[in-house]
Amino acid sequence: MVLPPGHRGNFPRVNARRQHQILCYAIEGLNSFGTVLYFTYLYFLLRDKFGFDNRSNLAVAALLGFVYAFAAWQGGKFGQRRGNFAALKLGLGVMGASYLVAAQLGTATGQILGAACVSVGMCFTWPVLEALVTEGEPPAAVPRAVGIYNVTWAATNAVALFIGGAIVEKFGYAAIYYFPLLIVAIQLALAFRLEKIKLPAAEKNSAPPSAANRPSPARAQNFLRMAWLANPFAYVAINTLIAVLPGVAAKFHLTPMFAGFACSLWGFVRIAVFVGLWRWDGWHYRFRWLAIAFGLLIVSFAAILIAPNLWLVLAAQVFFGAAIGLIYYSSLFYSMDASDAKSEHGGIHEAAIGVGNCLGPAAGAAALWLAPQNPNVGAWAVSGLLLAGFAGLLRLHRPDR
Image (cartoon, rainbow, N blue to C red; front, side, top):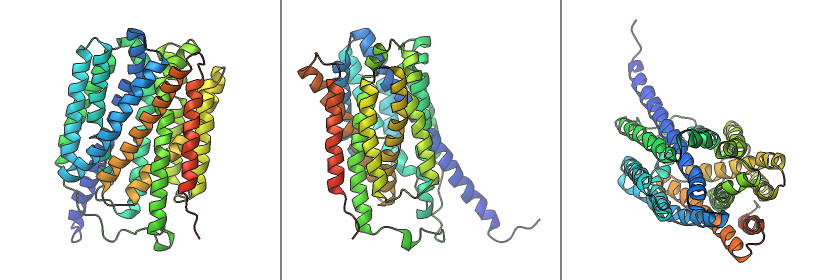
């Protein structure tokens, strides 16, 4: 059979783009699984081996968030200047070396320094992965690429949180270093393969979103700023919750395995929300969705930490997962939709996450230090911080005239 002119040439273009996407999502999913396994159960290790309580774990989380905020911003800029693959390989290399060294250290200080180094390396991976999944994509395809990206990392994130405790109970705490180390080795192999793929230019005739449906540049920038404000506050709640998860487990007499089972529900809800937001674009540039999500975030976060029984914790996680799903998705979508400087914008998006990772635990640790007799004071302090963020969101909003 004789193919029409130009038909043969279409196969390599389609195959190259498809291979590029598959490898990007594979590296991203592995990155999420390995880092969640390590950082979540690091707090259990600090509790069980070094006697850390909620206040101490929150202080560690605040330190790691501070490191992440600065390093993510630099990681995005590095990827924009030196190339995505240079940043990705550097980040993975630093992570792998840090896991290996941390596994040999027997002091709490060594564990914290090792975690800080892992954080630095990780900051050179996420901004460029966010950029790579939309590289060469026409505007009409960006929402789909971001949707698959979000579902992929959220799925492996939730699975790692769910089964991480079981892995620790089966293999011991050494698993939080060597499982992620093996994952990094696989990621590096995939990254070298990905680098060899030559992508064709984006199709010029790909149907862009209708100009009538596109927001004005001023409106797009306003939503980008609001999302960059909201997302750090989502991570104020997330990182505080992760840091005090050993305390929640102790409150309900849960082993690490059952703590993972019971306290990962919000991660699976977030997956469902990501799928819904990917398939339905009616939330794009609609302020009410962002505002509702922020309100739910505040109420559900406080409920998880002060609930007197496990059933209320589970119910609150449904709303918590829905809220952080929409807030995170908004930040990443607007970051990728508003500019061509995707690595740098991805770095700002991740740096904002780091700010939240620092502020929430810092507020909780400070409150517990000032009022150690009240076990819920940390939850109330962080909830107050979230309320301040909500007020800032309302102030930033510029209604259409």
